[in-house]
Amino acid sequence: MTIKERSLKPSKHTLAVALAGTLFAGAAQAQLAGHNVILVHGFMMDDLSNPPASFSDVQQAGADNWRDYWLNRSEARIDWPSNARVEGQIAQTAYQQVRQISQQGLCNNYCIMVTHSTGDLVTRHILENQARWLQADGLQPLKILAVLDLAGAGGGTELADLAVSVAYNDSWYNWPVKQAVKAFTGIDPEPGNLGVVNDLQTNTARNLAVNPNSIPRLRFVGGGSSYGGITKSFIEGTDDGVVPTHSACGATSANGIDSCSGNLSMAGKVSSQNGPSGLYYNHYPVLMSEGANHGDVITNQTGNMAVPVVNNTVLNGLQVDFASRTYNKRAWWQLWGSGDQYVEVPGSDQTSMSNLLYTTLNN
Image (cartoon, rainbow, N blue to C red; front, side, top):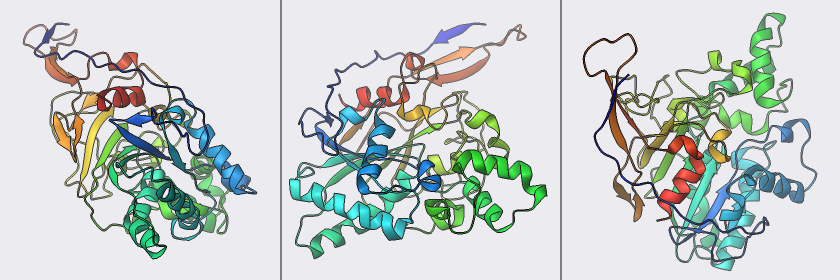
């Protein structure tokens, strides 16, 4: 194997400040690129088997979800119950927190929202409606600079399609499907107990809050395995064990794809790929990581190399400038030639995806 480096920018560093994990962290240091951070968590399967008895239960689950990395780097969270629907109780719960954020003036200097999984879809609904909600109460709409979507499920997942199907057809021959669905939902699906999973059906998700807006959605995408790999065969194209790449990248079609780019694999190989035919307006796949699974992207998990897709640009004033290098790698059986070309963020396997994006965007 031979490696030839073509360009290498120095890695970027920053000092993260530890803060208390309440709904509102309340310290000005918990910022990203000089802006307060709002977290919106993803699907909580425990809410289906054990519905939260109170909002404090929802809050506690929300705090626990982000505890590994993002909790102490945020000023606020929007927590929501997964046993509800986006346009119903989830929206009502979200509004009360959006209202509090507005009253406290946390986004007067713009906020950056960070979402995980279904939080992508919930946030899309919030952004489409929050100005109308708040103005009706005589409050200022939230000023949002950008949204960072980690393993975003805004395009839905085929696992949700299967869950709803199994709920209405509990036949014995569906056993393999049922195992994948139970790994995803934590329950034996029935028509009335799926909550937000109903909204995660691919067609449903792709018709919810789809009006374009001026807020850029920066996408961070994994391709690893979850639940021991039993869900992968039921998801179109590549996936992170839960969310298909077509959803995480922000593709306009639910057709299965293998990468966020038509000429760059999730492992960084420069070659023709089955990429998206188009992306939703203002959606930008920034980083891919072939090894990162659905949960890895918001934790301190290391060991996964990141690949830059949309890079060296400014999105709504937010500088996107990840270090990158291009090199050639020749397989052991290739006796001549320069081998295949690859692109990567150097040293990214030594840190987590969340820390990589935080330290880079925080410069």
